[in-house]
Structures are given as C-alpha cells and as structure tokens.
Image (cartoon, rainbow, N blue to C red; front, side, top):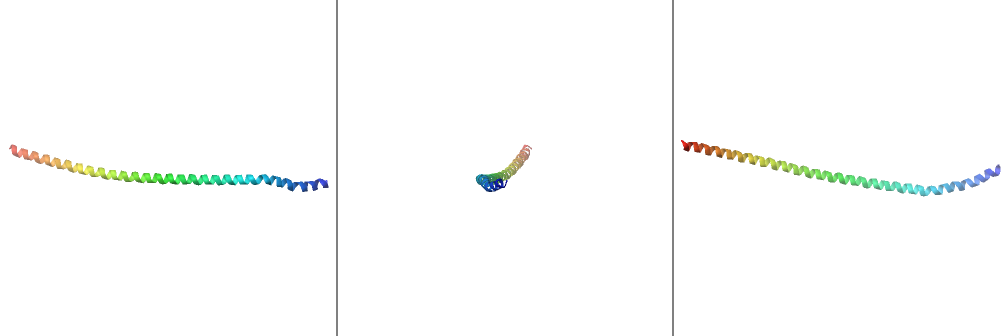
Length: 103
C-alpha cells in the first residue's frame, strides 16, 4: 500500500501537468473569441451611432425644407389673397363706373 501511495504521489504531478497543457490553448482561444466579440460589438455600436447621426441629419434637412415650404406657401397664399382682393376692388370700381355711365 505504501508503494502505491508513493507511485500515485509521483504520477499525480505528471497527470496534473498533462491536464494543464491542454488548458492553455483553450484559455487563449477563449480570450481571442472574447476579443473578437468585443471588436464586433464596438463595430456594431459605431454603425448604430453613424446610422443615428445620418437619420438625425436627414430629419433636420427634412424639417428645414418643410418649414421653407410652409413659409413659401403662406407667402404665395398672401399674395394670392391680395391679388384677388385687388381684382375684386377693380371689378367693383368698374361696375360702379359702368352704372354711373349707364345713368
């Protein structure tokens, strides 16, 4: 029994070393996979930031164009109302003139 215990004590460090030799490449592969995942996450976050920035820029541009269209439409409507009012006054004046001449 004593010799079996001594043999086990002599063999266990060798077995332990054998197990740890396979662990180092696995640990390195896990670390590499973690780095690759972190890089992919950074790239995805960067792509989301760029997309959000582009969407905000497009929205700002749309809002500016929309406001300009509103201002232009309001100006055209004021001009049209003024023109209609001017024409109505002119028609009214012509009718008054024609009635005066008729009498």
